[in-house]
Image 1 (cartoon, rainbow, N blue to C red):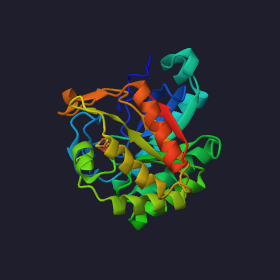
Image 2 (image 1 turned 135 degrees about the vertical axis):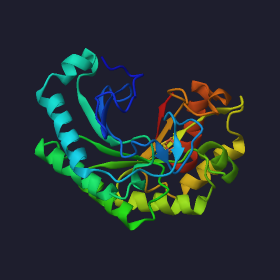
Image 3 (image 1 turned 90 degrees about the horizontal axis):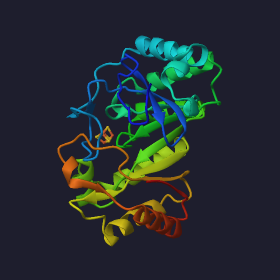
Length: 278
Ligand code: SF4
């Protein structure tokens, strides 16, 4: 049986396709992992990928991706996968998500991979009936090839979950392990919102016992205010599962009250709706 704690990418014995039970969505999410080598262009302190390395994925075998997704959906929709592996209360397919062990848009074949998923879901008559999500750090949206993939995603009725955890340069270095460049973040976010419905996803937590400061919260609101009429919303979440990075012992959760207070501040200052997952 799968559980909500089990987010192993190899739980179905496949390279690119893995099921997880989503506590928030109340069903099975089919993950597409385009980074089977655990390589990402970012190094977030809270990342749950074991043996995370810096870099990008090897070439994607699109034929294999198609076969794996087709075979897996067939087992879920026409076979006994749900009955054998999924607790009764979550026996439904809730989404398909590009969300793997690294940044999905860093795959050279990202656009082709989206097209491939589109082909398979059409075969199962799922187009427009199941959400397709791209979980991304958004850092490569200036690339034409990535924009093409996001356009395909939008045609499939999909949406983007664009990671912005902090909005000051120093915090971005500390939290995401990359140099901060808020102008570029804003530009990429605008590109994303123009191409597909876009949610900002934000992980909010303490480092060394300290919650983000008032200045940090203000910088975040100032950044999002500039795109407030273009976003679908903000997903604000706490540390759901433990980090697999060296910094893990330094991280701890903020309280539910702190999350709710920050969500109210975001809504008041930007007018963007916020969904909170403690
Ligand atoms: S962007 Fe995602 S996969 Fe990459 S390091 Fe951050 S949390 Fe991990």
